[in-house]
Length: 369
Image 1 (cartoon, rainbow, N blue to C red):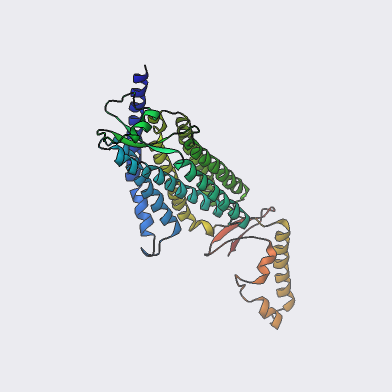
Image 2: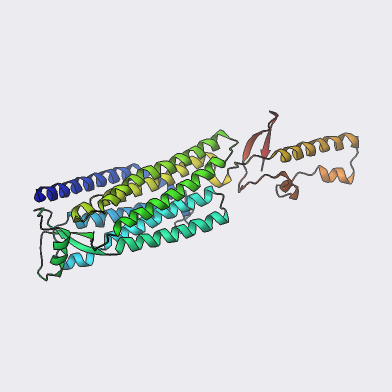
């Protein structure tokens, strides 16, 4: 009975790994045009944007993580000594991949929060705490595990694997993976820390997005995409993290690493999709940071109407004469005029954009900043 359970566990892990490799390869080919557009949009190979650097990092670090993890599992040429030197490579790449993915989500949330300093400090502290916990949980009590994949012998349980590592005799036809041993299993805490980080990030970003009051349908669609991307990322990645959390609660070596490759693939695909979707949609609105999503207050509307009335009254009283005050008033308004601050409109605009504005009296006008 035990022999059959071990055989089924190894067979299920093979299927999961092959499926994750196939899905990741298909997505890689599918997103090659998006990668080329990222490259073309850069002014120079030595001056790439932050979004492009993060896209390249999550893409190719994830590829390396999947290669080293699955090579160690499917290869059957490992000895005990070779596995002792190799077993930490896959966990290290897993931690680096998670750090890049969380950095992307953190920067995205910081920008959505309008780069609020307090939010930035909280996100930075959360990132440091999360990554520290992940590195500790990923490497603590980890041991190399040599598994006879061909025979699927029930003798390759966790305790006997540890005793084999103390033996000096070389064993051929074995694969190499990283296992978690000890009285207290700790690797599952790695996935718990990732889940907590994702919950906080998605909650903060969604709350700030729901506060926006867009004045354009295109901006509204962009905000909707950002909300859906964040929630979709959280649901899909949390499912993979919960799967791995459950697997690493067991003491069976084959069961512990069964969902590792699935986690690599899901983190890779979902994170890079966020970057691709934001970049593709922001092209319609020039750039995301150029979008105005603020509505003036009622007092600001009164100030605007008062300013317009005073302008017309001044023109009618002058009766064609041009005084020094009139000449000054009729000058083109500078976009950096200090009077603009009285409108109580907080915007962040780096390029010229046009926003259609409608006040509550159904009067419409066009504001150019």
